[in-house]
Length: 331
Ligand code: NAI
Image 1 (tube, rainbow, N blue to C red):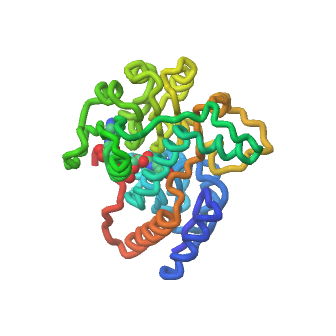
Image 2: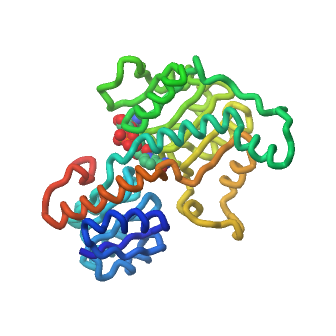
Image 3: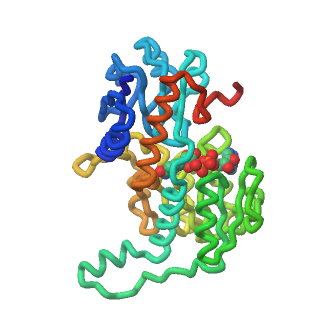
């Protein structure tokens, strides 16, 4: 079995090579991301392995099918980058890594909260320059604050557990999750927006969650609320978030994901002219913290991703059905 890896980074190669010792597959590492033009790089392969910003849209899938490739393995949990209806029409198998160390993402969300609140990034730079002043570094206690979680799945639950350790009250909105711990109160979005001091997004990107956080929802929130997004960029309307930051409605914004991240993230653009005005505006706010989709990036998560992805390939090879298959909503 030969597998073409699109959007490969050095850490992908390191962890997949280590795990592949037990599988012996032929792994072709490609730097290019997958799209309707680059698909040709996978010629001669039996499967493609893709990540969050690869584009497995209808045209790309049809092109892959013409090469005889009918296996798509995602080395991530989210699958919004794949046209599942087209994949099903083309008889393609799509498998993902539904769970890999939810704590990796949950802990990154907490790191963003602590950084924005206690301004440790600013203190670090100040001290290096011999500036020992405490002016403008005042934060607030997390103890006693209300945390609103949107999407109480694996990551949302792990995040809630950590925040309870800080002595926070945790409320959540999730239209589907039924078994919630008794100490987390499920609520509707309006109540969550009104009561939360910090809101953290942990739902997938779907037609229902696209721009769930917009002008109307910001208007219902507390003044100076903190918003953390480690889920998918398009759950937040970026233009409305910028307006909310300008008006002071949003007091802090921490994002590990961004609506137009495909053209920016996972690349070193330090010598390039960045054409995306919205990210430049976000970067200019003193109360905005941006990380480039790194919430998953821990040794534990990368090991689990490699193990599950290669075992997904094995189940395809052996013709077994898999609980990690992703199917269209109405199938
Ligand atoms: P999960 O499937 O365990 O949980 C998602 C939860 O969202 C479920 O409980 C579901 O019922 C809920 N949900 C679905 N539609 C909703 C809606 N309209 N409103 C509110 N909640 C809704 O998934 P998991 O593992 O917790 O991951 C969540 C998301 O985190 C992924 O879909 C992915 O987009 C993102 N993610 C980000 C990573 C990063 O590195 N930044 C890494 C891994 C995941």
